[in-house]
Image (cartoon, rainbow, N blue to C red):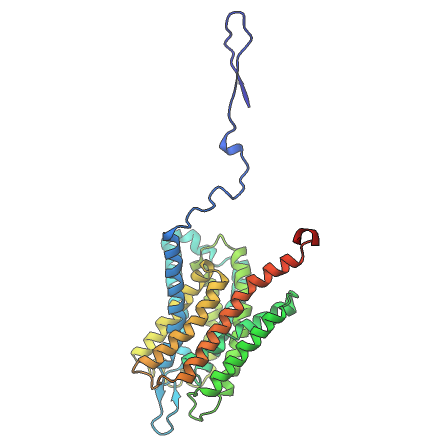
Length: 366
C-alpha cells in the first residue's frame, strides 16, 4: 500500500511514501517455525517419553504376573483375587479423577460438556470395545507369563497389516510379508521353548487365542480412537476419558456379575499389596496411553513395544518374585522377536521411498 502525504512543498507534486508489506499480509506457509524446538532439549524430552513408554509397557504385564498366587499341590499359578476387580476399580478411579479435573480446570461449563449426546455415544461404543480388551487381557494373563504376553502382542503388526489390506486396500511388499512371517515364526519359537503358567507344560492355547483376540480389539480401538479424538480435538483428553470410561465401567460391571468370583467371594477377597500395584498399573497405563500415543510417532511406539519384551524378560530373571532363570536359547528367541519387529518397522520408510522412486518417469531417474 502507498500512503499519500497531503503536505505539499512549494512547486512540487504531492509526496508519496512506499510502505513495506506488513507481516500479517504475508501468507502463512508453515515454514516460519521450521527447525525451532528441535534442539537438545526437544531430543531429551522425546527420549524421556520413549523410556517412560517402554517402562509402562514393561511394568504392566510384569506386575500382573507377579500378583499371581501358586497352588502348592499343582504348582499352577492363578489369580487369588477377582480378575475384574482391578479393572473395575481403575475405571471408577479414572471417572472420579477426570471429572474433578474438569471441574477444577474448566468449571461446571466444561463438566456439562461431558454429557453431550454425540461424543458420548461415539466414545461409549469405543469404551465398550476397550472393556472387552481388558477382559481378554486378564483372561490371557491367567495362563501366560508377562514376557510371553508381550511377545504375542507383537502380532498386532500382522493383524494391522491384514486389516489395512482388507479395509483400505493397502498392500505390503514381498519384503514386508517376509518380515511379518519371520515375526510370527519367532513368536512360535519362543512359545514352544518357553513354559506356561498353566502347569501342563504345553502351549496354553486358550491364552494365545485370548491374546490374539485382545490384539484384534486393540487395533480396532486404536483406529477408532485416533479418528474420533481428532474429530473432537477441542475436548481435553481427561474429558474424553470420562466418556470412554462410563460404558467401559458398565461393561466390566456386567462381566463381573457373570465371572462367578468377583461378588461371590467378596470384592476385595484375595487383595494384597501386589493387587494394589495392578490397580495402579492399570490406572497409569490408561492415562499414559491416551497422552503418549498422541506425542510419540508410530515408529517409536512399535519399537518401544518390542523393547518392553526385553525389559520384562530381564525383570523376570532378576526379581525374586519370579522363578525364571537366564537361559541362552530363551534370551536369543526374545532377541529374534525384537529384531524382527524393528526390521519390519524400519522397512516401511525404505519401501515408501522405493515406491516413490519407481513412480518417477524414466527421464528423471536418469
